[in-house]
Image (tube, rainbow, N blue to C red; front, side, top):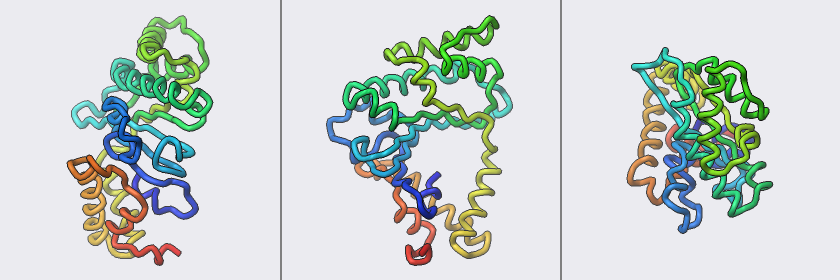
Length: 231
């Protein structure tokens, strides 16, 4: 994700690690600050400035990599997202929230067919005659209703990315990308990838308490690439 910051002609501004941007107002409550593992900002680094804010929850499992997830795997996150959605709506209005905020859940585990069907029904405001699908639809709806969300509108901005590449495949793809950007061989790419990972770890730790944002210049520094090399 961070490597997207160095792509040409992008409005991708920053990645916030472990919650909202550290440049959000100081009175932002703790629950909102811990809304997601990663928040992507486009066009600005606070809600007032940004054109788009994508909130992502990441769940990786090695032990259950082949076991499909169901609604119970998502309900806690859905409630958290829906609560934040309601808070932002009260602060900035429904129109602003609807056009700016998107939510995503990313996992390497596959999704059960009944879960996918339930999510589609929630976007349409429909019900199912299939008891397995309907049970999951009800559970997800309750998780969002807990925060008083308009179900169809909320789920239209929620995306589930299940069955994503395994950790090894992701690491290999990242090494190749880094080696390409840095202009050196795969060994050098591994070293630079370590530096990018360390950057993320630092922002997730004590250093990130005051500044949890990763910007283009941070990634370029980690890659050992000069801004002029991109021009």
